[in-house]
Image (cartoon, rainbow, N blue to C red; front, top):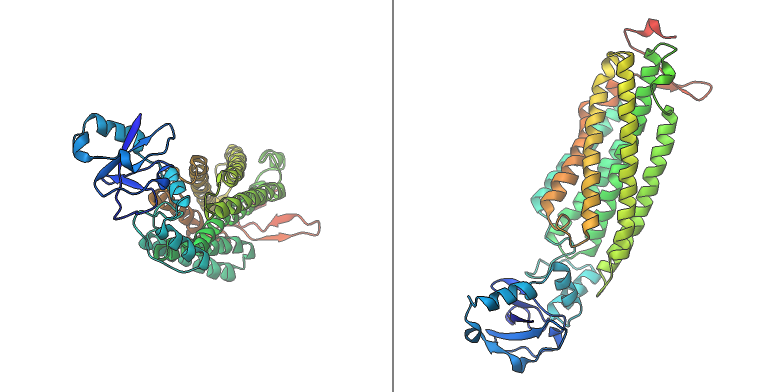
Amino acid sequence: MEALCEYDISTHRTSGIVRRNGKICASLKTADVDVPTKGHVVPLASTGGTADANDSVGLNEMGGEDGGEEEKKFENSCQLQRKEYREMVYNSSDPIYLYILAARNSGTCIDYIDGYEPSYGYVPSLGVGITFLVLFGLSALVHLVQMCWKRTWWTSVFVIGAIAEILGWSARTWSARCPYSSTAFLMQISTLIIAPTFFTAGIYIILGRLITLASSNAYSGEKKKLSIITPKMYLWIFCTCDILSLVIQAIGGGMASGESNKVGGDTKPGTDVMVAGIVFQLATITIFCYFFVDFLLRSQRVSSSIFGRSRWIVGATVLSVVTIYIRSIYRTIELVQGWDGYLITRERYFGGLDGAMMVIAVGVFNCVHPGWALPKAHSSAEGMDEIVMVSEREGEKA
């Protein structure tokens, strides 16, 4: 079957890109074809044969713009997927593409050029970028003040995570002005992958403190029934898994990003490594959620008021875990679809399912800060965490 595609030489003179009614279509063989006059149609053999400009026919010969059967042939065989479109441009001698490539390699900032998509698949919104910059900036500042005020130095993980988010959204704001900048693209990938790891580390510490708190409030015969593993094991096991996941994702991200900036580069191996890393992270969070829910159920069976005033931090932790889990599911599906998938090429999903989720995940601990909601802890001679209780049940401790 032959596909009929109209060249728009006013936009892409030598790239082999063809348009009709605003739709992009092409054959990988068209770069070798002499460009006919505008308004003509070139039959492109779907079997891979090289088209010849001498075979061109006018639009009137195929029945005009509403050519019926010919229009269906166009729709069926000429619509080009984004990935194919990009490969087509990469393998051409398009001067506009070469200009973009030179600017990218030299670090020069250039404005968006219609028809030439950045690595994102869209131009990041300046307004969205600034919004998240302000939100994460406020959260980081408040966390820093709260940490110093209450001397809960371990909550620095929330400050570091928020700063990582700031760097990532700064890069996306930069990309709004310089959409083809490879530096900005790589920067936002690496930092926005890293940031949630610090939030989950804080959550693991909080859960350990909650287990110690509940054990202190429980009767001696009930203490060992509250958690499957010890508080310290939560931190060691899950933080180790998070770091391992982070390393895998960073390696995959570096591989994929490097290939995405090469002519005809293959991003699949790097993407597969990233998918493996984020699936591992999702599995880790799923197991953690199981342990967390199990602990909450066991604690409630012992006493409905076992957490005392710390019940607010329990609610905050649950909310933070849920948002991180939603973000992990989104990221997994996004990467499985690939760099040209539906989710990754639409900013609204990234803003709603990554940016907004992470604002909630870290911001909820500004509203319910562990320094206020958790009793203070200190280390005994044996190196075990002890809780200085401020509880109505303090006299009942074993």
